Image (cartoon, rainbow, N blue to C red; front, side, top):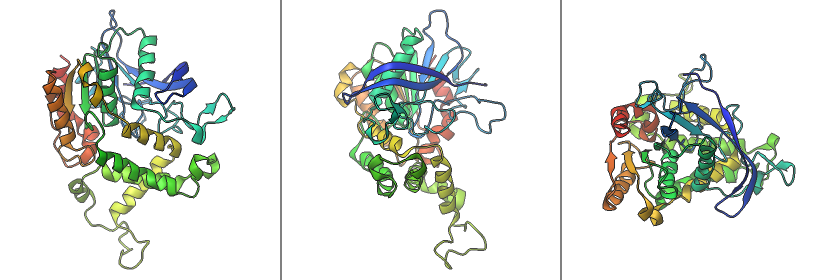
Length: 363
């Protein structure tokens, strides 16, 4: 599929923190067509470092399609011959410098000052992301969502949808999920991700200029994200103990690296080119704040959880606990475990294993 990015605007949005944002703008993509009743829409919510590019390509020459290409498309598990699939860039999206991302965040212009928000941008929540998505759904005239789905932070948004708008959502697909609330251990992990940004001398409490950003701290933060999303077995398979350069023995100098070190550094540096440090910190806080534990009695949807067996970021037990809790409420809940040694990233790269389960869940 060839897709293009659209833009959606909201004049004003009241955030959970009590602040109001004006001129909110986010990007979105659609795949498939709405039926006459407009009741065949599925919303896809993206992960922490992702965007609305869930499937297809912007042009034929693009080297990679959207992250859930193996699930979304004509005849696939999320069948675009049957469903109208919608995916939205998050508020405060990390990749605010990417040409195919549209988002309101710290790099946006504050209408009250005429300057970028920067450090003054408010705290946002998963609930705020959902409110933006709901406004978009209303603008499209959708009477309901057939399903909401997503991996990782996307799963949190799917769960938030079912708690916030229980009559609007029929089904939720939660891949590599943190469960119904963030565990303290995961809250602490997110804190370690943020630490390199805060320690970068260019950070200046978030008051940095475009030409003096905390690039090194952001790159190191993204390195931690990538490492935590992998698994030791998968890393060993990919890199072993090879040197980054055959001629540079790590025994001989501190700047002679192993292949795994070099790969993580390069990946993080490349990703940091499109990312923003202030946005990173706010998305991390949004994830830390997530909980629908106190709203469980509102839930009505059917659920499908898709944990990954080797996930050491959002452990399979997080999903297992959520499944048990939801079943105690008498809700219909299914689960399927993605097998592999790719860690958390198996929820993206190996999601094809769950295709038949997803297809049946949506039948």
